[in-house]
Amino acid sequence: VRLVLTQKLLKQHKLNLLESQYYLAPIGAMCLLLGAIFAEFPHGMRLGAWQIVREHPLPFFASATLGVVASFMTFLLIKVTNSVTLKVLNTARNAAFVLFTVTFLHEEASMLQMCGYTLSLSAFSLYTYFKSHGM
Image 1 (tube, rainbow, N blue to C red):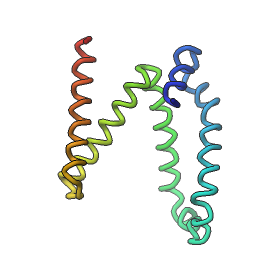
Image 2 (tube, one colour; image 1 turned 180 degrees about the horizontal axis):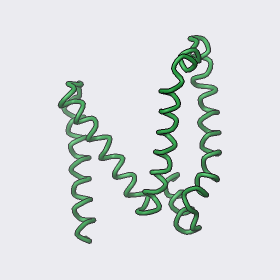
Image 3 (cartoon, rainbow, N blue to C red; image 1 turned 60 degrees about the vertical axis):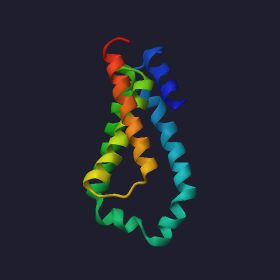
Image 4 (cartoon, rainbow, N blue to C red; image 1 turned 90 degrees about the vertical axis):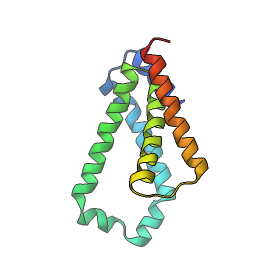
């Protein structure tokens, strides 16, 4: 639902990337912060997790920066293509990552999981083929 609404804002209301971030980023940040306050903050305070952030600010800053870049790239991809393409790409990326970790990093996965990931990649390949041939 979120991706379809984002697509509607970007394409039908002609918002550019910065405008869309201006309107949607505060809402997303508020929802994530609210969830983190209840789910993670008490546990993090008990463990003294903030000390890790203070001791190593650069990796946390780099992670936050990459998050902002990923958000902009998501909006750009939706604007150029559509939300279905983004969903299909994410599914293929996740399946490829799992297959990579199982094959090369020797992670464990059941036969059912492997069949599911292989099916996802096969469906993505077919989608790409039919999309590129205008079918």
